[in-house]
Image (cartoon, rainbow, N blue to C red):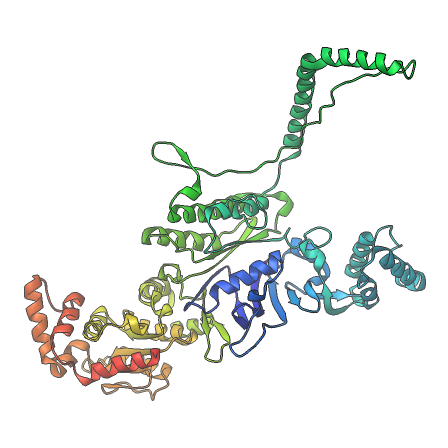
Length: 619
């Protein structure tokens, strides 16, 4: 069982939004786009709670916040255990459950279920006695012909019996929206929670909050609750220890106070006997039995000297690492355990982390990103989903970015969340004839080059690092590109540029693709790549395009070096001078090219036009 889609309406900054989820889902995008709001909306869906006015969406021109909030979650890949627990709310291998709040009806949990229509009026009755009377009347009128179960003594038993009957008689049921409060512990057992655990670590959670014993707000308490409690043998041993302790305590108290109580009892008997002859008074200690142990967990961190220190007294980085490390440990233990009772029907744990990169230096961030990715791919009796919101390129998965969800606030105030379509990208890969070398030749090359591109407002794609260095050098003289939200991404071979274009188009990221025309060599393979790039960019395809700038692509007539030799002679001179100064080979040296571009004087119009075009897309 896993979350496959979430639909949100009226929650905080989101008027409406639909997000698809996978085993690993990385929510990226600019600040204020709603990434963290998606994770908070899921937290409210699973754990409920009162919504404050600030939790309800209010548009720019709306005098009041919305009167209704809805979070609908589609669960897919249901197994036998999930279907048994969710019962009538399952359709095939999926189910959709909705938590809503409205001013008129308050908070509700509902789902589409196969329901017997005549049961609906009975279920709608709030009072236990009235509900039972309504069922008795239904049973009296139609019980025999429908084979309805006899009226039970309690309303809860009647509800359970009606649900069982519906499962056994689907031909008499209809698919309709039905209340599902019992799936989340409002009444009865928390059935949904027994199949799916959602644990959310917010960016603002302190160590004291995360390690709290409070089941609602403490990450540690909630994670430990995922694990099984004490087994029967341990409980029996504790009860025996408590009984032995009770006997020992009574013996000690008796020895300390027994003679005194006997003396006082004798004195009271004598005095009361003056008023009620024959009455006898006996005093004895009543010692309350020990209460069951209240077990909690305390975390401490030892320094190099072995001295334990409370986590909240440590630095933010260590506190954050402790909380997320706890997630790793619990998840890996759960995924590694075998449980015959859940064979073939694993429960699911979703780890949701807001900005996991907070307070982590680059090495720690990369290690954490790799761990979360590994957890999402874990197979075992404990299924694991991972979702996080991030601003860090370390957490953008390189597997052709299929796990990214790029969130945006649109100009009309609405929100969108787009993902790259793996099927479409696969078609592009097939078109460039990479075949079995995709992982080695594409993912490795694009992982680094596009990590920052997905956070940019516009991207300049180019083949090599030297191309990127020239444009970055020119931009250095103009104040750089970072402030404009422009990323320069060298992709490697021209075929990688083709695939990078496909990825950015899927994510709706504006770009200018710069490539070599390679006209001098007249190689058939390069001609094919030229045509592919032009077609993807919506241009007229040709084998050998002339040097020029188009709508979202541009190309040199031949290569960077050959074109700059004629367009910008001062660049070559600057390269030679800087190479000698640095004592390095100047040809195809990105460091030399960047400095030369910044020092060679006025660049040619073609290069300036390309920079202006990509800046214009980011504006």
